Length: 287
Image (cartoon, rainbow, N blue to C red; front, top):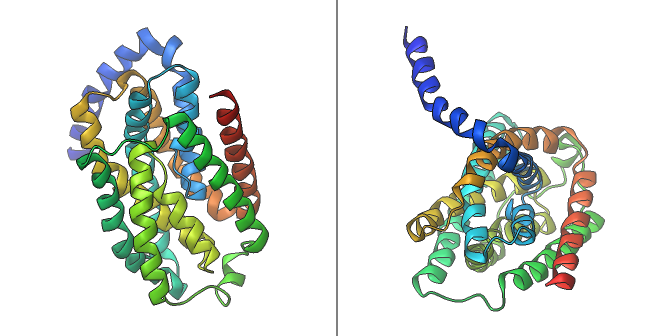
């Protein structure tokens, strides 16, 4: 009986969405694919979905404020589901280094939120235009991911467990505080930043690649939720796009965790790094 009631409520909630979609599918349906692809890349590599969303929105002529706000909103779907599925994966893992993840989150999350709200609270402007900042950021992340794959080629979990770091150094704590704060500020400007910075650092420091990605995804999820209220209050979210891209991003997040744990991570990251690098160079040339 309870299950039946839940189905009725769910159907009532979905009816207006279906009705609205019948009249707008021809225009906004492609954003479902965009949301899914962005979430797959974001949750499989630790790089935020904004790396996919921002250049797409910029090419469509959507304003900088709407691009960032809508990217935040979409990631509230995709990164949240990604954080849930990665958390479940972490609880199922028997390797002791996965137990480091809660401590990494405790260190990183507060300073990421502080970085975001330092930008919002002081109305700190972007150092340059959003398109230019995104271009430089993408080039940095793309090159960083490529170098990470060269020097830290990930192995299977069974092989990694004897090689990865098993404890958090004081240096790591200090570095994560600084990185998370800076990453939070960049996230406030671009909707991406903190997850990429943290994942990049953890992988370079020798932590398990999948654990680094999971940590980055959870940090990103909490960070975008901490900042979405600002954009909602400003009325900058493009809801027509969000209605299609948001649910699709949630689906993409589930697919991403499967890809990241079953496919060769190095190949996935090399492909994504190349794409991000290309997007950054393209944005820099055309902006």
